[in-house]
Length: 258
Image 1 (cartoon, rainbow, N blue to C red):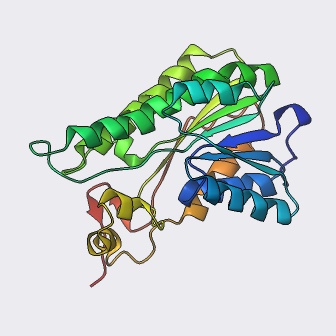
Image 2 (cartoon, one colour):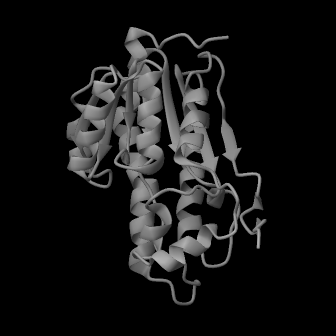
């Protein structure tokens, strides 16, 4: 059965971290589903190019340079809207894979600021706009790292557990309001930048993350899942959806072909 287009009061969808990977793919798919997408990220050139691409495809998109960890900038951004329908909290990322004993506290702090405080900033600033729409949706892109730990992942795992708890608690606190809270937790996703950023540009080390895995998830796989969840009927809340490639049974159990 085809999905109905979003109503005029809930058709604006804001996507954070939209300059690449899951964020960019989600923006494209939400635009194709009928949303007016607002693309935010620190890299202005990337989101402006994506907004132009989406507009040229016949959909509506606007780019807005934004650092989600800058609360003053987030609050100023929020004043541009009377209502919004969807907030996709996607900005995040991982830094390093060191054990607890030698992990860099600066990396831990950066991961927490982006994955948790950034999500908190956008959610707090835009929640009144989501309520005002009468049919709002908050999406938190967490990770399977938010549901199970693994060696060398302490800082990222801690941050994603924080994002999971934020989504879970918000859902409890706003029950009865016309806003859904959806958490999508992807497992192994191969994108152009995630592993490369994690390992400070070390291409060989980044490639080993996916070595021997026949088909890791793609950004489009996650974007399709997000769009599906967002476009369910308003009374249907996908509380938590864990998404993994078939080759990954858990964070520590992955089938790799020789």
